[in-house]
Image 1 (cartoon, one colour):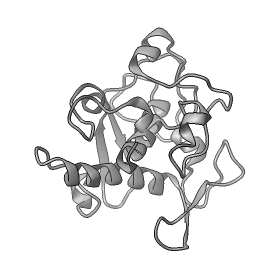
Image 2 (tube, one colour):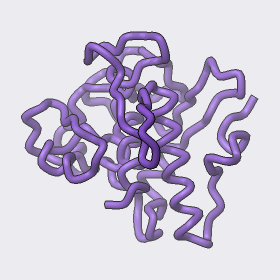
Image 3 (cartoon, one colour):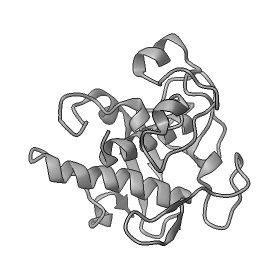
Image 4 (cartoon, one colour):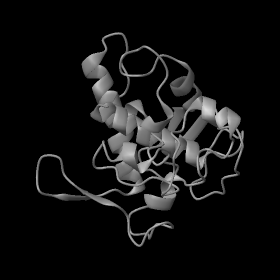
Length: 192
């Protein structure tokens, strides 16, 4: 799995985990109702000075949005905790499966059979806003920077930017048929 796939997995996991109603916007920290169909569209960054980000979940899970343009993005590309830890550990810096003894990998087929297959964890339970304590852990996860020795605190903003923009950057490198917003074009996602 490439870094793109890893980042996309994290994004989809986060999006799926925070879903829970058919409403068109996501309210950070809002309750997730187990067993409900994910929303088609989510609106993130509602407090951002740069503007909100509208994410089409339905396009990513139904259209040829994977790196090879051969199908939809796999659920675990974003929903990284929704796979067994043995699979997850193959893709550093990811470490956490939920529940910790998970034996299944989230797929659309599994979710259709078991509406609770996601596991009930949301992105914000681990990746809290800067200066806040996450619900699931004593502190926000940290990783070593890929190139330098710097430590990166994976706040919700960092996690989403690394996953979403990182995936889009990889798509631009590998596919000439699409032109998604990239990490260098903030206004491609953020709209005031």
